[in-house]
Amino acid sequence: MELSRALFEAPSEGEILRLAMHHIAAAGPYRAEAGYLQVDGDLVPSPRNAHAHTASVDRRVRELEGQDGPVTVPHWAWGWALGLRGVERLHGYLVVTSRTQPTGAQRSLLATLVWHTAAALSVAFAQRRQREDALELYRVREERATLQQQLISVVAELGNQRAVHSLMADIAASGGGEEAVTRALHQLTGLPALVEDRFGRLKAWSGPGRPDPYPEPDPARQGDMLHAVAREVGPVRIKDRLIALVRPHGEILGVLAVVDALSEADERTVFVLEHAAASLALELAHLRNLAEVELRLHRELVDDLLAGTDAASAYARSEAVGHDLHRSHYVVVVEWSNRAADDSFARTVGRAASAVGMRSLLTRHSGHVVLVADDRPHAHALHEALARETGTRSGTIGVSAPSDSVPDIPHRYREAQRALEVRLKSRERYGTTFFDELGLYRILGSGADHQELETFVHEWLGQLIDYDSRHHATMVETLSRYFDCGGNYDEAAASLAIHRSTLRYRLQRIREISGNDLTNVEDRLNLQVATRVWKIVLGGSG
Image (cartoon, rainbow, N blue to C red; front, side):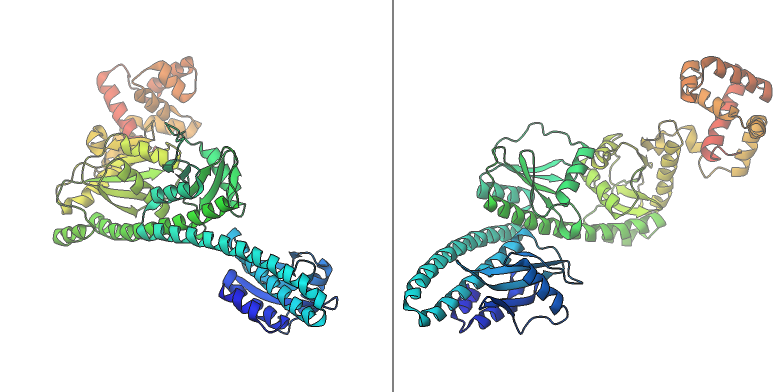
């Protein structure tokens, strides 16, 4: 409004244009590249025009012949020539550039500034004509009255926008989160409002019509939707929803939407939705930063616990981050086939652990995510929660035996790694394995004498391994699968993708090559243990 007053009080058309060019940055990330005034049918450039690209910009503006249109300026991503129009004529041009594509709100502010400038120029030109022709004065006064009415409408709209800004700022300051934003959006628009995470799971809903139960998201469809909305500027209508991305710093954290089954949304609804999404993005980014600080503190403590540290220091640091390290703890190691063990996946694991009630410290270590939890994890809960978070069940979790002291944690970490390793090399690679349920595999751990284990394997499987090497066969693997299936011919043949008669033939050849009798209890036990050692400890190598 102060700029509008200054524009209307400017002594000349040139001064009005100068003020508009000088204050263009108030409307957004803009630069006034050039300005023109219409004088006696010709466009006269402003003395403030940039000189670097004067000729090309001047030529382009004249080509537009009074229409708005794009202007290309090197090193600037966006450029536009905006006509300064009165009721009856074009008063000039403002050529505006920006290093980024303006948002809808920024374009609205730019349009408002252009309107004000055009209005001021109209008044200035009218006053000049007033001195020349008394009859013209009446028409100019009518024009001025019309423009003032338009200005009143603009002021009213700005007042409405200011109220929206104020409400969203109050919500952000109060830390109300998704519930507060959706509640305010519903109050301002009268439409049901909702927030989903980036995977399509509902986080907040305000207003009538909430589905119960909420539909389970389709990962492929959700990904297509996010890409479609991300390609557009501002909210996008998809079926009965008007959707805006919650995207601080380019990373999509979720979507904010209103349900508009009757297509009632107008420009005001779009404006409110945009600003609500921006407010929510700021708050979620703040929460993300706090979570990253907390994660770093946890990570440093867990790294020291896994490497070995003194108990007094560990207890003091755990109290500082709000964790009781005096309880019995379990070390949990997590790997997921489609996710690298980066900060993003660490946060995902942390969210899943919190969702199932696990109180834990967390870090990334040696290519996997490690939790130090203060209670024995449920056999399936963490894996199920991570499957929902990642959209796939292809993950493996290893859990140690309980640790009752800080110095014991490095040893428990090795146990968790062992449980993970055994699970990854088993028939069912994905799921949760507890070290204290490994049975024989606890004896076959990394602490066993490796040379002795190799000798044992060579004694019972050496001839078969040599045969496989010479003939590119899979006799040892066949025997291992046969034992894994409990001696069931049908199941073993199916797991090897061979016919039952082929399996019988191979088992007969195994008896002939090795000289061992599979019906003998002692031979059978030793052969089964040898195949386990060959596969788990020696990695199935020759």
